[in-house]
Length: 75
Image (cartoon, rainbow, N blue to C red; front, side, top):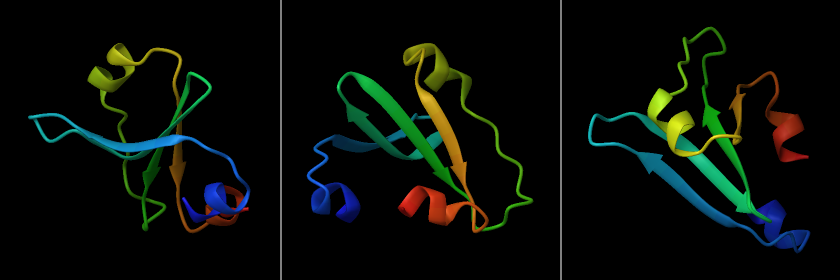
């Protein structure tokens, strides 16, 4: 969020959770495009994208951020 502010990249940001406790950690919407990010400290942790998210928002991008690719996300 700070990087977006510093670079004047204006976007809406949210998190997403269902009543069944499926969740996406961080979502950015910019120019009608959704980018979803799931943060995992343990790169070996299993990750499943909630199918209800994909049905509700087809065409959205989902990236899993780990300690190995955090720099790509931040820079």
